[in-house]
Image (cartoon, rainbow, N blue to C red; front, top):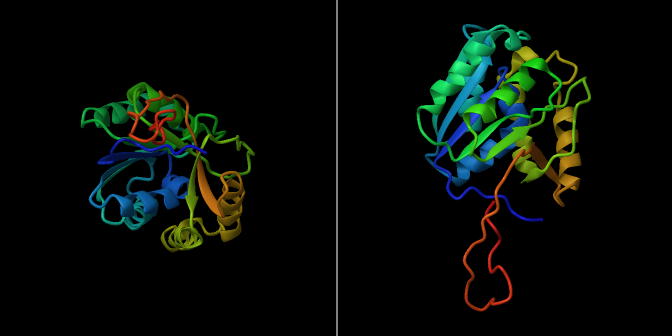
Length: 230
């Protein structure tokens, strides 16, 4: 399997329709990336939950999931379940972020997600970030909308355990949800791990990439010399 690596990682953008979407879909990946790139700038935009307990949970959670990062969290007050009806406000928020500079990596929901809020946000992201490495995370839920992913982040067992512990610690308001439990998070991570020759993994969807070939190195005249950077 080839490695998918950004050329650099100075700035990440995270998008979620609801408080908890980002850590559920990409919490282990955030832990790994932020620890591997101390001081990385991380901006998170969440469309719903402003002024509620959910916002408090989200700010504390993202701080925990982005250790050592320069973190900026924006939580909007769009109504849960009604994001498509507030398309213009959400689109303006994405465009405002776009004016702040070029991110090296964008992480958000997947466009095939069955939840209308997730799907609407996912469809907006490429309209503002057309030439960026964008990973679409997945969230297991009742609708049964899981599709075959195209990119994987292998997670060591301690990292997955830390992810699950932080989800339970910071999202107390969600503990009565039938899908919010250790078995759900561990089960999906185990399936994705099998698919990438790892014990556990988070998986992502990528809509479009270009291929770049690294210069040949000495001693390897017949091959690429290094893994391609995608």
